[in-house]
Image (cartoon, rainbow, N blue to C red; front, side, top):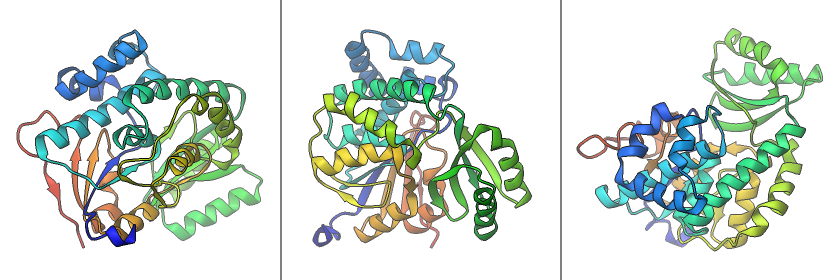
Length: 319
């Protein structure tokens, strides 16, 4: 792969799933012709209206909210290709964005991604109804690193369970912990001068969830054939280059019990000679991270701006 680095200048990034509801994305899903085309296929596959279920359900990470997120992400990529000439050589799926990345790179057919997304959501719901039901994942940012890790050391010394589920940038982390400890944790972060972003239920990306990985592999992934990706893929767990079916399958399973390391992805992309990142899908975070905008020119296509006339604005790197 290193011999090809000079030719690989553009990457598409499918973001992880943060706050996402019908109010923020419904207009895009209803009006965008690329989203309508994707929804039509998904409706036929499942025999129901995905948009209707998404509109009426109030669970943030229900199977239909998750599927609508995948569809919005792929529709944004379709628009970026068709309207703005995006031609990536590298692909990244950050966290939940791996599902869209699998479809985009041809590792899974879109029809299979529709079914897989629903199947995995139900698998996770079953698991967390019985195991780690009291655990959440909370994102914090602008925390001073040394004092923050001191706080984590104190929690560890008290026997308080937690895991770092994501390192997104300097001072930007995702922490999985018991919900009973969340309020005190948020206050401790504020006392350090940091900020809280959002809380995820169910939790994600922790080594403690190894049994979930095994359950998903046995009950869900065993029913799907994964092909080698047609583009170079970069793993969100360690920045490794993924170019085989086995590596793609491993990456998709790693999301259950391995933390995200966005700075590792940044390093790999830079090493591959990438200088422009297209973020396609609902994203309020990854395309704004300091380590992202320092290293790449950034173009974002999302439900808020996709329907506006004209070309998307390109944010030039800051250093």
